[in-house]
Length: 593
Image 1 (cartoon, rainbow, N blue to C red):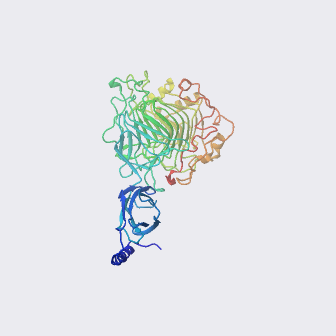
Image 2: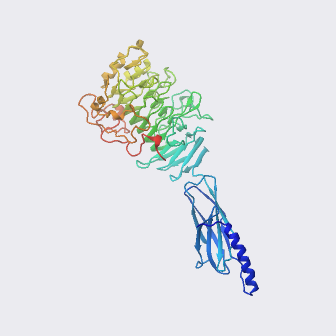
């Protein structure tokens, strides 16, 4: 039975009587034993270990070392044969359920061979917070994957500073302070996970309570070209964060195009993207003026509060990227972005859409469709938004006609404002409108070859075909030109080896194309959509729309570009290999980190 320290008060009194009695009998009595603790205090996290050295003197010979935790006897050690010329080492593991900020008092008392007790010596242990806070302006540092981290407020990686995040690290974003990680131009983020040990940026909310907009996301900024008249500022960040290089300062589309802002490989970003101030939102991953020396590969964004990925100018490339249940657009391009993307996936939640209108692709050149003289004007297009996508799979919110979806959903691809974006070898399905083109400048860029859409498969669930109204809400093609007559866009689509299908009443239609219908969100929820779905193509039924074949890489935007893997024959993001397997997570709501 455990005893308390109070018992030793009685023993000390009895010992005193014995001392007096022994003295009366003329016996030589040495001083009582002593025990000192070094250090007298320590701190560690729950589950961590602390160590103290105990120096013991016992002129009458040592008998026992009694150890108390919080006043209750925990252990009695026989030290009668212990060499006391060296300290006794005491190790203690803080309970995993210990309350952060509390103190645990460990007390030591020695009994000698004559049963004389020492006075009590205490070792005070403070239970530390296991979470390491990252806030303010960081210095060059490497994190430790064994430790949890919390972003608080706006966290900056400034020019000349590198933040290294090793594989397996989990970094949470604080909700109350709208935590956001901002890598400023000249700074670097080295976040390289592995297929079996990815890096996770996620919400700090409890399991089952995470939601879109829990924190601000990751913003990566650089010094590559943007086609604006002055350096733009990224939305919502205080103090103002400008980025890129502009023509007014002598920049051209080649300026800083190979700049390196770091590397993101095997990274997940969950529940990010938030309204920082009215009409100023961050995305899950924002890339502003970032050069193509930067690596973005195997990155998944999930349940973001605005766009999944947004590129503002620059030339940065990306491969193997996933947008899961983003609130606004999945892939948004602006300000003259001129990079490349291959192998991308978007999966849309039927009721997860923004009032501004949600699309899989949204592409702008700037805030309007005006020409930018000498940069993007119909004669010179090298400064237009001109990025090239290939092998994208878009699984929209409405896979079948009967599926109810948010009225905020719009288009599989909304291309406008003189953009010259190109999309090849891709699959779009499940949006009410397929391709919406707003303006003559954008159509001219397609017809001139500045931008190109070729070898794609596009499907909508309704029976609608080519739109005839500028406000068409169901159409394979829609436009703001010619009173809404989208026949010119439809003709372009057909002439460039693209195909279409519509009138989808059963998900088996997709199996015929090579895509398992169950991969669409459909009637599933955040808790029931598979954690690790298999996106490998099924065999399907032979035909022009079967995704197992039909890819073509002969266009110079692809064949002359070493970035692209041109060996496959399948269209869409997947063939016989599911590159999301192992590192991605499609049910992060209940994931325990």
